[in-house]
Image (tube, rainbow, N blue to C red; front, side):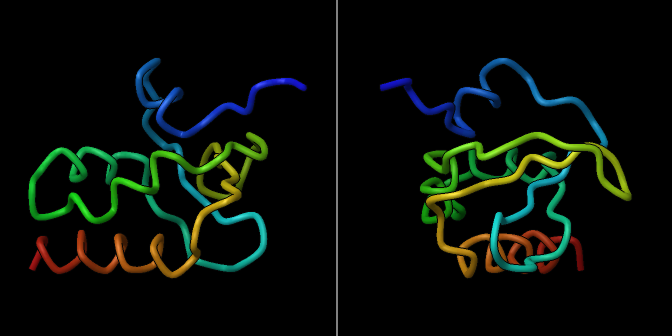
Length: 89
């Protein structure tokens, strides 16, 4: 059985700008991969499970490259997007 690539693996390698995280099944919007930098701060530790998401695919999208994630709660992705937006206010 082949090992699954996790989002954590891509983050270690470096994810280029204009890359977005999308859920394979649910519309969670377009979450910038730059938002992953917020996971390094203690207050965002609860979203670290996102890094264990399986990369189901990488594809071109309307706003840049999309990393399609599986095996992750879509609500967790939406919550991270909202938490990042709240810090920008």
